[in-house]
Image 1 (cartoon, rainbow, N blue to C red):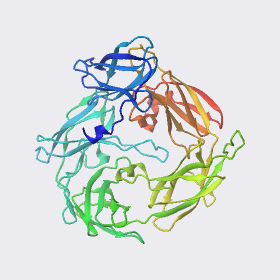
Image 2 (cartoon, rainbow, N blue to C red):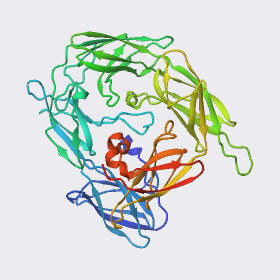
Image 3 (tube, helix red, strand yellow):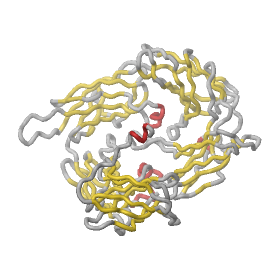
Image 4 (cartoon, one colour):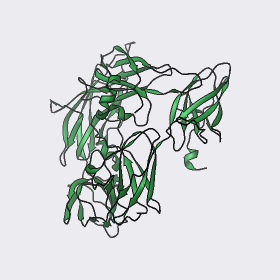
Length: 532
């Protein structure tokens, strides 16, 4: 048994009467049986039971009688499916039909400038997205494949969407502080940069073949990256350097290299364009992470000099002030508020491994305010406050001047002082129902989610929040006061698409605008948005 399998939680023991759920897993379009699908029943975070469909797509599993259970179905080449079933109290539930959508596929061939196949090329497909300081639900993700001996590739398990397809430079093994790229990046259909790419539109279960790319020899360029500490920063021992496209919408890794014990790295063969170099790794001498980044532009026929400085953490200091904290009904002293402050880098930098730049840990505030101190590396970061009791960040200021967004700029030197973060406790409650389609007891009722996106007043420090709808379509979501745009939709790993500006036109009628008042309940009825 592998460590990964051993780490999986065991099915939860269920007391009381049980009934059998039996049925078949089929393809949504053709109705053909799907064998080997993993079926998991849950009534909370832990699984109740797990089984797999047989050669005919059939399955049978026991479940607690008279309850709603959440069923998840997973199968390679198909999109995951989740939904509810109601288990009868006094009889088995038979003839259950679970339809799963076939995943989309993009396939093609990579050739060189002589139309010969390129073996072992890394081909990726991704959806560009501009991340904002409010959009903390977004995640950069890319799907990839490697070409075979015929130069062919196949990228599968794709949801519907618009994907940029690119072949990235062949992995190059650095030697003696030099990275030599043998081939240049190429973007479908015939572009050398992201701006020349044309997205490939993919529908439900669609196979797009013939998405071919041609890559040429790497350009005759060179970049000399020198690495040195800034100020009192610790020196670098065996630092890693990552070179990415300087694109907030697509932080693609072009190459990695290691400096070893030296202080310079030479990268040869980068295509002309804009890039970002960043340090990553841990300095074993001090047991701390290292950080540094620099933007640079590559021009054909030139050698660029790039100074990459190892940054020292910059102190960030301020005060948290608690407002509207509820008093205990029995007149006793309130328990200390426990929480913390985080500084998050832009989401397009998270892939560099810099997840949290600064964290206070567990603050305990017994009175109305408390000082905090943490540290961050230079650059743009976003303030986040997390804690108990429903507190939220209502206002932020520095040296008495209000901040108009949760983002602050960390300088290369000195400190950031004078921050004041005001937390409010008077949350409101959004309650309502989703007008979900009705079906038979033998079909999965989809798992629906409700998403609230700050709009208008209160949007500056708001964050997108979400809640799962109950099996009956009801939902409750606690929100800071302000205006929100609310939408309900079937659960999806890529639900962030619902909230992107590009979807505004087709989904506008499914959004409801609501105003949340402190300590009040706001009712709303939502129509389920269609699958995208």
